[in-house]
Image (spheres, rainbow, N blue to C red):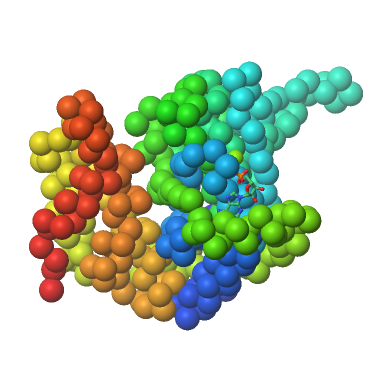
Length: 326
Ligand SMILES: Nc1ncnc2c1ncn2[C@@H]1O[C@H](COP(=O)(O)OP(=O)(O)O)[C@@H](O)[C@H]1O
Ligand SMILES: [Mg+2]
């Protein structure tokens, strides 16, 4: 069965209340092992429902790998992990055709991308060629090896981690490829009390070991379908485009938000509305997701960069200056 017919066969109806409950269960579960702002945890779950990939960028040791593992463990789907290193080859990600001496035929050995949630740890340590192979799978949701195309399943989500360039920028992802990630999230340092509690929790066992799934693939596929079906007023589509245009005409910017990034904003906004128990999108949904969806896609002029402006500043200003539809 191909991915789409499998998804269709497997979708059971799930209203906004059901989706809200699924999101809540996953967030609460992840919170048991990760101390991070609620908003970051919610967004990472929304990405699954919006069928987007996530990149977690932050300093070493703030829980990026832990969060990715906790998300994957919270949903009862297939999970694989690829630690990116400089010697990793594209075929280590996608899979290879190998010759079987017994049958005299080539057979395909699927790589780690053939999964539901793929944790790509330290994505910027692999060579650009290997990164490109992964990004192609993410974009096309299929893998082509030796002329044969293999579709990936639904859901298929990549959660990648990277350290900021200042710490370890071996092979920074080109901006055009960062665009393949629906959301870029930062964890930040935990609150003092949380960080202190963490030291106690970690004194014995890794709390991750006791984490159990609280949703399954069918829950996720149903939420994906429900989010897609959500109604959006025409004025809100225009609102998103107005925000994008604002980023494009900002003097500090070389390249603003693309039409593709606008689609991403709307998909995450729909997932947010659904998980909030609504069957319609509001301007607040768009405002709430604009920065994590758009900021990593903004290419700043060198002068702006050198004075410390960030993509997030540009997006916040664009949202602040765009009239909200009523
Ligand atoms: N915010 C956090 N919440 C819970 N555990 C954390 C947090 N930050 C760090 N840790 C713990 O510190 C260790 C390193 O975290 P890890 O996820 O490997 O960091 P990173 O991938 O960001 O370098 C793990 O044992 C993890 O449990
Ligand atoms: Mg890590």
